[in-house]
Image 1 (cartoon, rainbow, N blue to C red):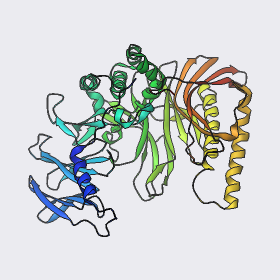
Image 2 (cartoon, helix red, strand yellow):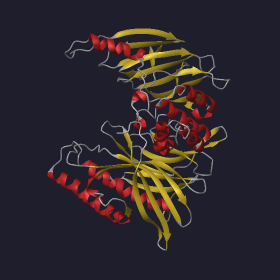
Image 3 (cartoon, rainbow, N blue to C red):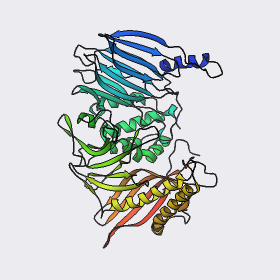
Image 4 (cartoon, rainbow, N blue to C red):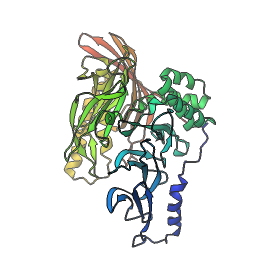
Amino acid sequence: MTRPRTPLLLASALSPLLSLLLAAPAAAQTTPTPVKASSQTCGAYTLTLRENGFGDPLDRVTLSRGGVTHATVEDTMVGVDWCRDVTGDGVPEVLLAGFSGGAHCCFTHTLYSLTSPPRRLLTAFSAHSETLEARQLDGRGPLELVGADWRFAYGYGMSFAESAPLPAVYSFLNGRYVENTRAFPGFLQAEARHMNADPFSGGVLVEYATRAVTQGDASADTWAATQPAPFRAWLANYGPDVRQDLSDFGLRDWPTRAGMNADAVRSGVGGAFTAPGTRAYLAVIVGAGRDPVATLRLFQPSGADITASPALLTVPVTRDSYGEPRLTVWPAVTVRRANGRDDVLLRDARSGSVRYAAYRVGSAALTELRDDPLAATTALLSDLSSLAGHVASQYRSAPRTAAQTAEVQRRIDAAVTCARPWLDARRGPADFPLARLGNFTFGSVTLARDSATQAQAVITTTVGFTDDRTDSEYVSGERHTLTVNLGRAAQGWQVTDWTFTPRSGELYED
């Protein structure tokens, strides 16, 4: 089975923190730790660090020249990673780091070119990795910056100690650093082999993912079938989810390369939306301003450049409890069709309930699929997802009046009524208590059959029910395969039957 490994504890960043914690008295301090100030130079600029210990106020590093401050980074802990010329223009760059605190997360890195005035070339959220390494990967021009992509941390039943990152490579293109990882397949493969030289779960996952990215899904699955039994079963269980989770790998900066705001909140998926074998990135991007809207656009390569489509969809943006923008619509999964192109499912929560809809994506238009097996499948997914959300919401730890409690129950009852007709087509054990369905999520959708008259959708899901002990909206669940059989009749595509089957292949079986 998997062998737990020691986490990457980022000793250089955490040792000062541990010293402070050990030195602190048992009772909470009533006054902030005195400011410790230090400075250093990089090119013509002065970098000043003000360190306040692990508490208020935040640490700060400033970039200044002639008494004028040009940039500031604040965080629980801050630092200067390095000062060197990485672009090759004779002007040094400086990499500043902010660490939010925690056992191993989170780091954010900001790179400035020390021109007059300084230019910000990159802001990278590095999660659990404490720096970006400057390396020459393509043998010419500016250095690449190598970081880490931690999308698999804690994923697929792993602890953090077992998790491992994929490389993230930033290239200097059109005057700024952008993620360009997919342009370095040889480097990715070498890193994966090194990571998995002594196989463990995180290394196995990195090698599987690298093969999927650089050689295709079929190659990755062929390799997975050769692994020892525990890993083989684990990859068979989670492989469809892993491949879906990789769809946007290396593509998140395509909007930036197409001229969009580099700091804009975004969420998207990759797929062959316009032609088989031609990768594109479908992403919703939050606009600027006090009351922004989000636009859905398709980003595609055009020679060495990336181009953006016109806005395919415009939706409002809400705010979370911290005032940060929150998307109400975003691309959820891509689905490969028989013709080799991909369609997309959009998750839409604008009404307060979750709805999924299937769309065909073009370079200038987004068309909702109506009389289509994928549309019929998403109707089932929508009703079960919406129902589970309403059932779980009754356990949110928020004070409610009697009227509000009654409204929550009314919504549950309405969702149960909407979902009940689906039970007529369900195959399996008789008991499927809709009123207790508190967890229904899915990770991937595959059309195992996609003909003119028959189709079969295979969906990886997590399903959980509430009981008398449920006291939180986070309802636990078990992984299942949802198989949906469909046929085309005179009235159009219909679900003929659907079945849940437990999935096996966990790292740690009970």
